[in-house]
Amino acid sequence: MHALSPTEQRISKNANLSVILGVLGIFLCGLILCPFAIGYANRARDAIFEEDVGHQFLSQANLGRILGYIGIALWALGAVVRVVATLV
Picture 1 (cartoon, rainbow, N blue to C red):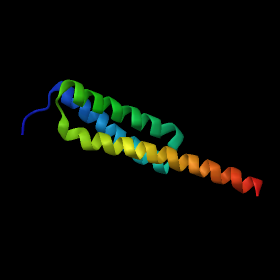
Picture 2: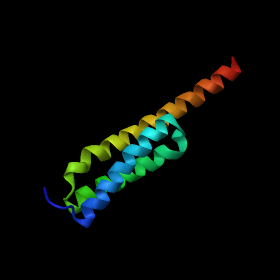
Picture 3: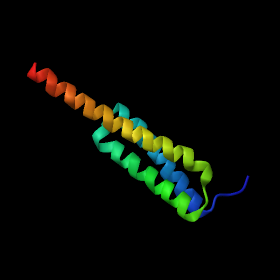
Picture 4: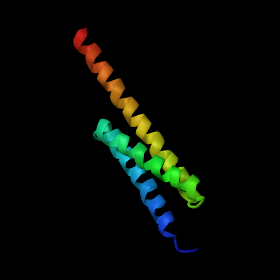
């Protein structure tokens, strides 16, 4: 196993942060944390494709991005349910 280059370290950090923020966003405050999860995932993915390094972190970045979108969708669904419940 080789040491990670500075670019790979940045990609790894962004991919890990995206997963952590995505999970926390689903369980805590999705509207605040999930967009950050998506942003960090996109940064990691962009760096992977632009620099052509760090491909081993692509699945983490994708997972963080998916979790971010799920968290936002769950938050929106909860908001719709609350509005409908107050109208009924």
